[in-house]
Amino acid sequence: MKRIVEIVPARPGWYARWRVEPGGTRCYPVSLWVLLEETDGTGREVIGVDCVGQWPGADDNEVGGEFVRYLFQTPDSGVPADAEPPATVPGRVAGPDLRAV
Image (cartoon, rainbow, N blue to C red; front, side, top):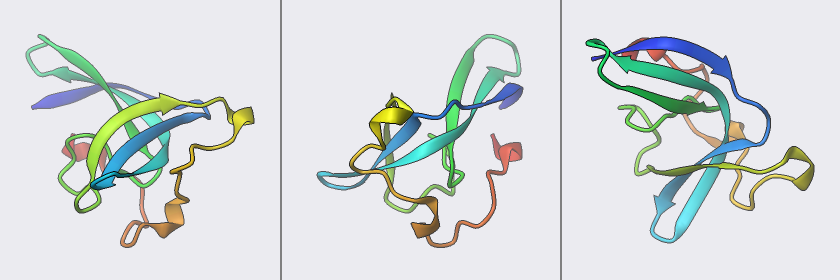
C-alpha cells in the first residue's frame, strides 16, 4: 500500500502518452502530479494524473490503454499530434479518485 505525500498541479505542456492500439498512441494533458510513498517509508515515486483521470497502474484506465511515457511540449508549440480532447473518452465525467492510489 502507498500513501499520498503531496499533490501539486501540473504546469501546462505536460502530457501522458498511452498506447491504445498497436502502432497508435493518444496523449492527454497531465492535470496534477502526486508524490507517493510506501507505508514503511522505503520508497517514493511521482505519478502524473491526466485530465481524464488515468494514471499508470490504475485499475480503471481506458480499456486496452498502456502507459508509454510523460512528455513535455511548450504550450506555444501546440499540442502533440496524438492529443485528444478529454470529452472524447466515453464514461469519464469526474476527476480521479485518489483514494485508490
